[in-house]
Length: 213
Ligand SMILES: [Zn+2]
Image (cartoon, rainbow, N blue to C red; front, top):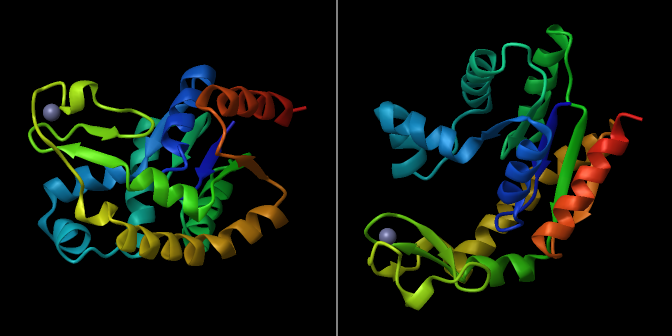
């Protein structure tokens, strides 16, 4: 079973992807950390992603993801991709390659939350100045208002409401065409992401179990 999981920031897709990967023994791939690690080792990627705040070209991201998956999951079976693909172009590159390898994406999960809820959740996010731990004042409050390491917690500039709204607009514009195609391909399942974590997780396990039938 190969799965991709989509959703706006703060939809909880990372949490759900990890739970699914643990529950079903899937290889978990998360594009944000993956690209951050690439940027740490490659000044050119660092310049594009971190200094200019831009995205890598779709082909380049695809090549990186493909090589990584080939290495980590040589069978190309039983993986879950979080944060990739996020555009129609990326999806097409991915499924064309998988097809050549005799594989496919079986299921695409879309975790929906309203923009209002995304703003509410994201603007509650704080980061430790010292160790980088992330807390959420609503869903994962720091005990005693400080990080476990004792560091001070601050809000990232890109977690302020104006910045969040801009990111959400980009998310919708990029993913709308992808979502249409996933529907047409008959692999999209939309899930309400505004429910408790355990409820969503149970729901997803049932959906995946029922999918092969
Ligand atoms: Zn800390």
